[in-house]
Image (cartoon, rainbow, N blue to C red):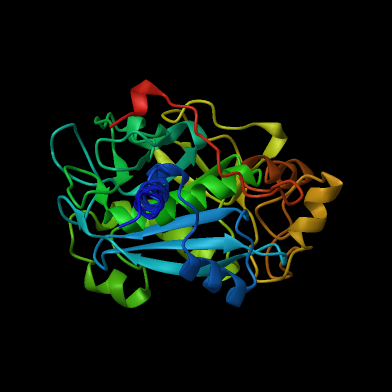
Amino acid sequence: MDLSIKRSLLIAAVVGVGLSGCSQVVPPHLKPIPPEAKALLAKKGMREDAPIFVRIFKEENELEIWKAKADGRFHHFKTYPICNYSGGLGPKFKQGDKQSPEGFYKVSAKQMNPNSSYHLSFNLGYPNAFDKSHKRTGNYLMVHGDCKSAGCYAMTDALIEEIYAFAREAFSGGQKAFDVHAYPFRMTNGNMQRHVKNKHYAFWRNNLYQGYRDFENVKLPPKVDVCERRYLVNVGFTNGQKPTDPTAACPTYQRLPVEAIPRPPMFQEAKRKAPMSPLPQKQASASPAPSAAAQASVGSGSTFGFAPAKPSVAGFAFRLNSTLSR
């Protein structure tokens, strides 16, 4: 064979190997949203960088992602199968009980771990104020890959990459933190009745149920406060007071009316830099109107809202917090 031809073939082979290698060097935390997921976003009229909301259901082994749309509400995007979680139904109590937590958690960019020992992960923030008020212990409670769990919610590597990408794009779009609500099961009336004799029923009914029902009604992550060692969902505090000690008595409050009415488009609000409220502002006629101070406290609970559209940032990296790594 002619030497020049051999040289050409060798160069072509080297280039081919190099290009093949380049397709694999993108680290897992920077992988783009998969084409199939992008197609589903387009079908549902959702933006890649729109805020997200996550719900976890133990009994059903499911993790849901909801995404905000221009109508100001969150719409179901996709349900992912949970590969593995440890323990049974009920909250986590102490370090080493191998129980996956239940409750209302928030995840900011610093809780995202691209260097996780379990492929990728994000820290739920357990123990939160409620957990600490009950002296519950534990750390490194994550949603991660690798399909192995010791108190965490484990996904397959491919699925955690997709979920991680949605969180990354939401942060890039301006979301400060996304809510993760971890439930024992879908808290329908039927399921609640089925578990009425469970030893954890009082915790579920008195602390988690209202948050589940309010989101089902209005498709907005509820405003959650903690006082008297319990969750308060969608309440307004009078006289400008707010809980500062999760174990202390609750300031005077009243339940805010919740009704399923549209909000102004959140994209327009973001462009005007107007404050966003996690609840519709129209008052339900059947409920007593809360005081001005109570109404004013609602907006302070908002954890979403984003700036005008930004391009997807392929090089977006999260600030690591070594205390949250696993």
